[in-house]
Structure formats: C-alpha cells, structure tokens
Length: 253
Image 1: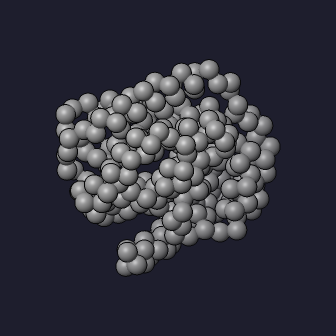
Image 2 (image 1 turned 90 degrees about the vertical axis):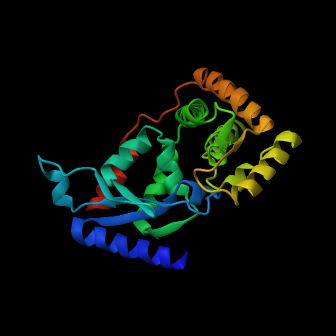
C-alpha cells in the first residue's frame, strides 16, 4: 500500500510539471475510499487543479479535464477548478464525495477554503437523485441474474444508504460505508450486509455468486422509494454564484 501511495504522489508531481497546473486536492475515490475494496481493486485517484491566471483569460481555453492514466492498477484523472466550482453549483454529489474522501493524497489551504464555501451549495434533491440513479443503474445492469458479482451489491447499497442519510440528517453523507451502516435498519438486513462484507473480502472483482435474497429485496424496494422521495422534493439548489465567483478569483490570483 505504501509503495502504491508513493507512486501516486510521484504521478501527481509529474502532472503538475508536465501540465503546468497546481493540484489543489487529490484523493482516492470509489471502493477504496468507501471501505469495501476487493483484493484486486484498482486505485481511483481524482484531483482538482488550477491553471495559471493567464490561462483563464484565453479565448481558446485549455481543456477542463486531465486524463492521466488508466491501467489495471491506477485510474488517475482530474478536473479544472472552474469545472469543479460549476459542478458544486449544480450540487454534484460525486464532487462532494471527492471533497469528503478519507484517503487524501494531497491537499492545500486553498482547497479547505473552497470546501467551506461548497457547503452552501449542497442540494439534497440533486444528491438523492444521483444516489437513486446510481443504485437503479446497478440494479438494472448487474443484479438481474441468478448469479451476481458481490461488489455490485455494494454499488447499490452504498448510494441507497447515503440517500437515507440525507433523508434523516439533511446534510452531506459520509463517504465510508461503515459510517453509513450506523443508520437504523432492520436487523435482518444488517446481518445480511455483515455476511456480505465478509464474503467480499475473499472474492475478486469479477467473481460471481448466488444472489442474497434479503439484500436483493432491500435494493429493489428502496430504489423505488428513493425515486418517489426525490420526485417530491423541492429544488433546493443555491442559485447565487457570488460565493463561488469570489473563491474562484481568490484561488487563481
């Protein structure tokens, strides 16, 4: 693990040097951040970067995404600061997860200021729709057969529990799966999840196993319930760009 982390930090240095950018925040995203990685899981590294001020004043603006590496071990890509702030304005739940990841490879004081401002733009409706959509897509694409990949259960369970967390506490849900498990749930479901967690530690990414009825039933019913909940929520997005514009100028100057 330490060897991989050091390699990731070297890659981040390479990105800054070759792309001429400043990385503000770099984290682990996906199963390793959530706490249920398989033995052969890759490393999903996500970062937000800022370019020199002059690049934001060009008519031919540089691209707003850096896709650096994708192989069996490392998946590294990042977003430009301008793109990230626009996504915060939309209530992008994925970006809030990057901001709250427990595995941080690099961060800055500038990002901490951005993170504080971003709290004003968390949208419960946008987040619940995102988590519903993630769970529903996983259910439809990967959990319909008699045999399933156990990792895909977590790709449905975690977003549904995150949506429940928002419903109960009205704030950004925690990234680690074990913190979401602190939510009140039927004992039968909790026992099944504990069994699934143990089995997951011993299975690879592509291995398939028999469906788990209790977990399957929860995913199917809760997906429907969260869709209905999101449909009836009021649009709570913060449409005032003042704070985001201010932090953007402060960061690039």
